Image 1: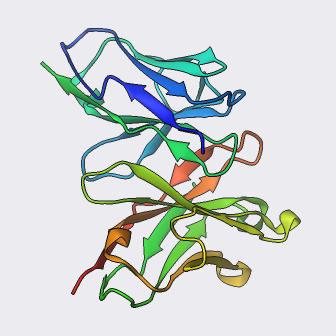
Image 2 (image 1 turned 90 degrees about the vertical axis):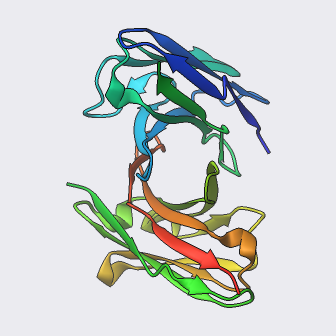
Length: 107
Length: 121
């Protein structure tokens, strides 16, 4: 199985900050990397697919990058509504696996 | 608008069975792969299994943790995806989500709101 390791596990930042979450795959996953946002008590929401492509309706403050085994999610101009847990996911091979999540809070 | 609505979650005893349903609308159901993903209380996301599209004969894949106990199926006439869960264990307690797969990019582009399954005495 491909292990997806996110860092940090939790993050606290100020309104207006730019934050970066990293995700490392235990082996190469081509471009089959997605990012999800999950707010408390809600279903996950797809933000980014294929490393850097924004889902329809997702604001451009979210961006993705990386290649091979190392990937990042960057959130610019942090706002209170960005408080959530963020997950990376590989869908290159079975079983499909998720990172353990990064909990983002506002200072 | 794509809509996925899960139902069927309940409290069930260990060793029992339950069938979840995901009602789909707003897209051509038979054209898309569909997934089940679960989330235990306070934990992360865990992929459960996949139903490929009609062109791929609705074949399925499962996580090792549920293989042999869970079965994914579809009813094309009802635009519905099902998850039959047998021999349930306490560790199957979770919110179960269905998700749609984008036909071009194969990512999970739409999710339902989830349904809670509690396995307990």
